Amino acid sequence: MAKSEKPEQPIDFEQALAELEAIVKQLEQGNLSLEKSLELFGRGVELAKLCKKRLSEAELRVSQLVKEQEGLFREVPFEEEPED
Amino acid sequence: MSVRSDFRSRKVYSVSEVNRLVAGMLADYFYDIWVRGEVSNLKHYPSGHLYFSLKDEGSQIQAVCFRSSAQLLKFRLEDGLEVICHGRLEVYQPTGKYQIVLDQIEPAGLGALQKAFEQLKRKLAKEGLFDDARKRPLPKLPRVLGIVTSPAGAAIHDMLKTLRLHKARLKVLLFPVQVQGEGAAEQIAEGITVLADRQDVDVIIVGRGGGSIEDLWPFNEEIVARAIAASKKPVVSGVGHETDFTIADFVADVRAATPTAAAQLVARGWTEAEERLEELVPRVRELVEERLLDMEQRLSELVRHRAFELVRARLAEQRHRLEIGVARAEAGLKAVLNGAASHWLELHNRLTAQNPVERLMRQKTRLVGLASGLQTGIGRQLSVVNSRLASAMGRLDGLSPLSSLKRGYSICQKRDGSVVTRIGQVTVGDDVRVRVSDGNLECEVRGFEKQDIGG
View 1 (cartoon, each protein chain N blue to C red):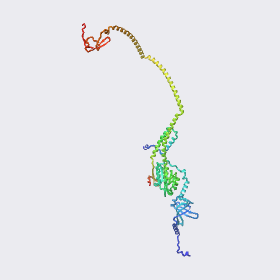
View 2: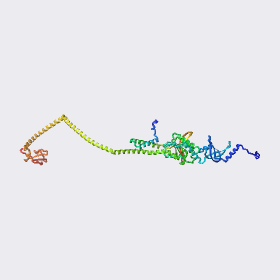
View 3: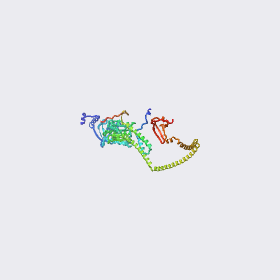
View 4: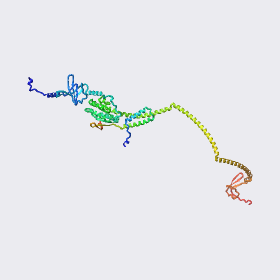
């Protein structure tokens, strides 16, 4: 059940961007059929949307490692000291 | 004699007493002296103490540097090195030999730290730790950035600010350390190792804000250099200001001038990715539109091409010929059809000739013909009768009342046309018509007079 709820393994931002670049390169070469061009265009728009979504989702998170015992660390949120 | 005579009053010291006295005097007078000399016969003891001789052209003196001071040395002591040392004189009472106990040693000429820096730099360079071939590229879009620095310094603040400014979509994992003073180098080295060994960390920044050469010193320590060199993840150094170069900078995969610059380098991929995305999307659209336009143009060019003119001309000719052909075919067909039609008509006629209805019609026609013939015959007979009748009527005319009227008789008629022959037929006031030979008189009965005629 839980498996079917999850969609396909989401494509990573870097991959999506790389694929988008590849599409542009292909289109720039210009020897594609019109159908193929339009197909790539569609895929490109899809990828761009995906990338933008990823960009809007991600934000800077900051945590620090605190030593529990020798060789063992715990991750805790890092609160920046206010600047004077 | 006097020596002997003084025998009782002589003061005799034990050996230990002498050494103790000398030790005390030396300690009193030479507790804070600077000595310049050349290091020779250097021995590192397992305890961490250093033993060597300081010498010049004519003399030498035993020197010792105990572990507590030895480990604070910023450079490696070696034979032949000209040094300036600080310390105190001490008598080693078991042997009665004196030595100088050093708490500071600096290379003469260069500053101590400078000397140490040069030494370590030379050594690590020799090992190839600074080689370009060792330098790894930074990940373009790191997801986890490890930072080794002070949690309270300006550096972490600047770095986080820069990362946010450049919209770096990543997680920062800070390994908080002391960045100056005793133990700082060890902490920094541990931080690098711990972060580098974590699976999630993609890249590490090690650094601190500006300070004196002593403040920056941990980043010139061999232990830090070794940790950077051994790191499994690329390391960016960002120590002090633009003009500060540390050993860490040479070993790091990328040297950034400042902590802020280091953060920029790490965030750059994200910034560029966003910019690239902004370019790529319209570019895709542009390219497809270009392609469509290009195809349209090629198509219209092709259509206008001379070759097509020829084809068109040929097409026109073909069409013309086709039209002629069609016309001919039509004519031919018509002829054939006409032939067929006349043939059909003939057949039809022959067929209808056999038709009973047709026969009846024909007989009817004959009948009509007969009838009309009959009529004509009758007509003729009738006209004969008519003329005979007319002559008979002429002859009868003399007998008509009309001729009597001509002779002066008249006929009186009532309005209903009945002829008045007796008085009793009318009353006074009745309109009557009196017919004379050439017309009628319209009259009113004004009175009447009965006449008895013969009767």
